[in-house]
Image (cartoon, rainbow, N blue to C red; front, side, top):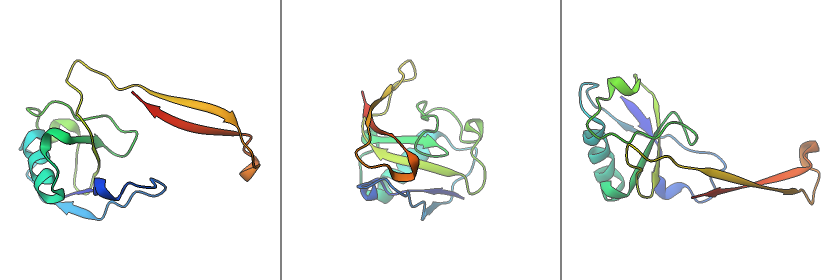
Length: 117
């Protein structure tokens, strides 16, 4: 059994809720997993990005790879977001824009804004 979030609930991204569960055989492929999650969240599988372990986890790109080969074990978390999955020879780049914080919350002098390309 694996747990995952609903990408439709990612408006604030402050806390990610992994309250959805899916029971799959680890000998199945990532494509099979993507298809099952796609049906559960009503988003086309061509528009689902799956990450192992959380928002900053590795993207599972190869739909022919076995679930067990992605090191997903019982109750592992899968971060699901809506978007175009990267091809196996592509990489995502996240750039953070840094600016001085207007308020000194938790002694933090900088604010980070995530930009994804």
